[in-house]
Image (cartoon, rainbow, N blue to C red; front, side):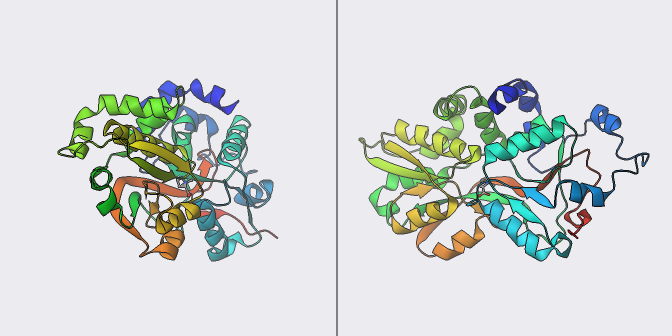
Length: 313
Ligand code: PBE
């Protein structure tokens, strides 16, 4: 159902996704004027009401996500969040709840991140995070198992060079609303032959060697993993993609069960998992810069900071 609704917004998203990666929602003057949250003429909606109306609950995503852990940290660190809870379920359920709240112009606080089309589809804002629990600008790293450089130098070189921009990732994510991720990735590769040629420059082809890429189950990572798959297959590899929780991803690379991952969000989102396995994998550095996580609300809500939320009585 969500998919269906989203498709109608595809064109809007295509135009505006790149604007939202830095976390700045679009200024849609028509909408904000209608919502009149700045005129002070509607005093009934106090921030206390907002907090009690949503029953002191943050709508979260999968329990194993880094952002879920960061949100638990926020619940501990912010005194004004005493008595609050995070309700975890799935990304799809969070997006449905967000869409329903917006349809009814009701308050909601969700765990959100960029790049994500939620910012193109809806007028949203990140709540300020004065304690920095959610970090600032995040990057996405590439990690590989120890020994990959010796065992598969060709793949290692390509993975080491793999680097792209949020706008690239967004274009794959957007295309993947209508076609599967592998086709969307193939399309990006076809349209970005120069970039791909830089990654593969001088690398010898291989003859069907198997390689396993481990990813996490979000569209951002489905995009990068599928682009890497297409490029490595072009080089002659037989690529398997294995989606798992972030902690399992680090464990798999640390233990050599998987060969590489382009999915770690750093320096904040996956820091705890990273530190747990640090030294047991090789970090090849950033593959993308300009991601973000945080608490997100519809722009019509009259709060700007996590500190504007009220403790539960
Ligand atoms: N995310 C998307 C993931 C990483 C990618 C922000 C939801 C997480 O929190 O682990």
